[in-house]
Length: 461
Ligand code: ARG
Image 1 (cartoon, rainbow, N blue to C red):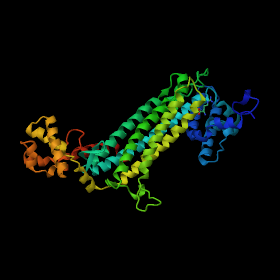
Image 2: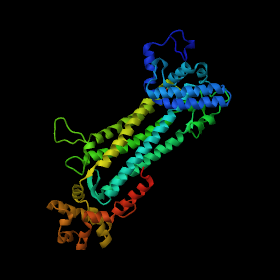
Image 3: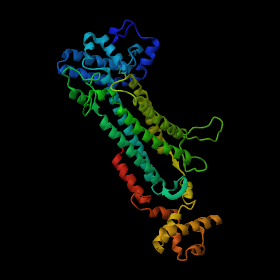
Image 4: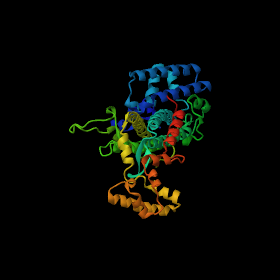
């Protein structure tokens, strides 16, 4: 039989396979709260502008609230024949309240309806993830304060570079997350316009009040072009872009965790709560959560690329392709939320092998730059020359199989006659770290100040 909502001009019903490919109720039922909120705002506006009787709007509001309770209670029967969440709710409303329910869709289309619902959903998701990202920042900053003076090897090319502190390293991720949150906030500002009232694509002849619905739904203003409003999914793409960059950051931290807890490194140990065992190798403690955070970053980026590709060939205005905008956004949101929560748990719980980190912080000639800097500062040697002299000393130490600080003063003077015993004072890990007092540098006091500043900003929630 023909579709109850749009079947007027049809003699027959859709093929089963047509229903299957067309229906979105399997996933867009997630929009039910937003759909009800949008319909309530629309109905109130229709009554206020005299487009429908006030009594009908009251019946619609009550009916929608009851439907909300049914859905929340799990007693609502979703129908694939009714395609999507919008028609499922509208059909049920007419079942419950009769004629009045059939007036709800006046001056509205599913095109502006879904654009509105989806914006509301993404806005809530942004707010939820922002809170989670703030929580992770807090966890990182707390551990950073605790380890503001704990030396670890700093790497470039994953080769030992210069000593840093573990706290400094963790604070780098606090900064990244701050930018991630900034990107979400920027996207939220542009998202926050109401498409409702754009109708199918051209606007409507009814004397609607778009400011009223926009404000009722917490939007800053109505969108200015009806064609743009029903065909724009920039808000979803910007959201996925922001999530992709954030997930890339989480993935880098996850990769570092995997490296740090491997036996040859043994810098950290994840708690039992965030580790899994092997079914065959009894000794194993696997960092599965970190690996999965790393993997989810790939899938979140996949969601962005997938939706960009869906959108790129679409002429204005709405096309059914756009129905496929929701699954990538829902999946990416779940993945991002789980990743943030798992990272939060790992960071809070992990224990630090400070001795191991300190030992490696001093290996690999990590204070060679300090030696070169000493030659510049004390002997006024040009840096490039100092670099060369230091390189020769590193070569000497390497040939002897010792650290720079184990060379004798005579061996040093053979390369640069002016060197005095004072040079040994800059060759320790602690002196190296303590000397990096430039703004943003790794000196423990700097790290403490940054961590404290962030903890103040973030509050204790
Ligand atoms: N389920 C549809 C979607 O998610 C709603 C809009 C349908 N509009 C239409 N003209 N078929 O995009």
